[in-house]
Image (cartoon, rainbow, N blue to C red):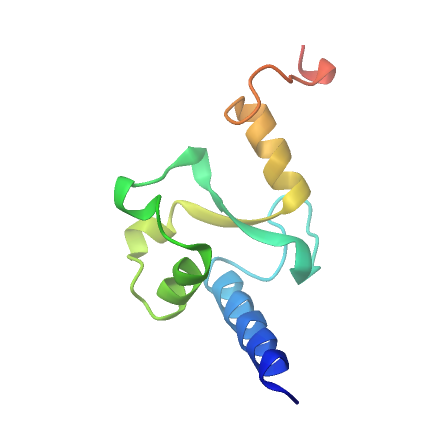
Length: 104
């Protein structure tokens, strides 16, 4: 196993640990268990100013290492990428002009 393979495995292990900390390795909306599409979601768009600029890799490490406070963890959950985009559409946060006809 070369250096790159070890790095990929280490990152996958950290992602899995983070998802376990946040409630499980599955989308908390649709139940998707494919770790390749799972991501961290900020509930209600909650982002503290100091954490907005954190690199995603560092955020994952901080969660696993206990640097991220339990208070902040309450505002995070696991969603698949599809559910995360739909969440943003429904909140009209990221794409305010692109409402679904189903919502009207």
